[in-house]
Image 1 (cartoon, rainbow, N blue to C red):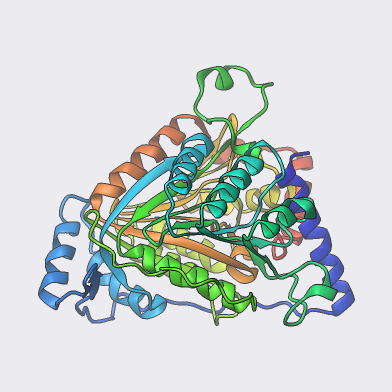
Image 2 (cartoon, rainbow, N blue to C red):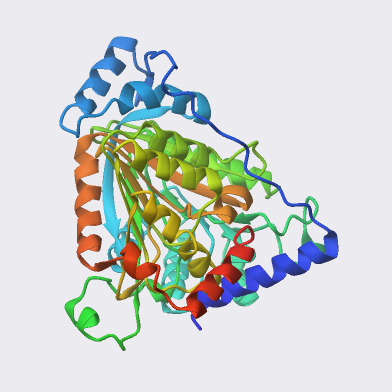
Length: 466
């Protein structure tokens, strides 16, 4: 059993225990129906390195983004609604680098840490005491010794199996370490909210460069997922397939605000004074919005904006996701898009570290396939990516799974990128995964064994908690 498998099993067990002991009531997702067709278009403001842009400047940028993608009205129909939902600004002047799998992502992150001069803010779900975890710890200790302030926010459940001595060593060296929602109720700072977990993955260095996506800090991500030898040997240990982003430009300040807000929400000690918000220059041409969601809010901002994007789709929806246990509204959004002629394609796992989520998701396949949604399962890897691309011009990458837990119980973090340039990069990555995936055909799927039906039924029973 992998470290991630252990943690997900442990998390489920403790949630069920807590539910039974405390009589927790089940919260539910709000009804969210985007009024897209009848909402009047309005100018969507953008923010650059120097602050808000004029309506004319914003309009010119959005027109440029609209050119070069698939024919779509997503900019006029979707952006104003998303602005009202999310509230965080669309920022322009950003450089966005798409990172694929652990080796490339870790190299970029460790390189940024090595170059740090003022501070490092790291927020993570899992930080293992293994080769990769110790490599990161040593890099953070080295920078702290050089006078760079390191602040670490780590989820209590995700790091449950990491020895206390691992974090004690960091703390004794001056690293500020804060445990998010402690599993131990005796150490809870503001009531015991064990079921609310910090699933975000975020690294910010000097307030100028940031990394986010699906990757945890663990040796299970050490291998790449596209190697020919690995594909040829089905008995080889499966690599983990993940997707992350490196961001520079004005959006980094928005990510910094989310980190500091999360720290404050956990009643962490005051952070040592540092230049957390340095002046930021334009580093590229990408338009990006940072979206953080939290169970304390009325609804998941990421969930709402994803439904809005799918509801605005005119030509294509491309989704890759690791844990697929959708609620009825998301199912309806996918089916409605397919019914109006949108090409909806899902890449989901063929192998998983969460048996229940895997089969809960599969229990929805027949309905989706009958409705015209195309489904593929990525073979040869443990799929851990969380990405979506709509009409080739609206893209998101982050930590959010398509399950009830991400939408209701977790603190999650995604970035939304607008424009055909990044859309083409994400589409190319999607196509590579698609070539290594197996199509699920309705006729064959309906002939699956009674044993699979039973597993799907059992998984569906628990999908709210997964």
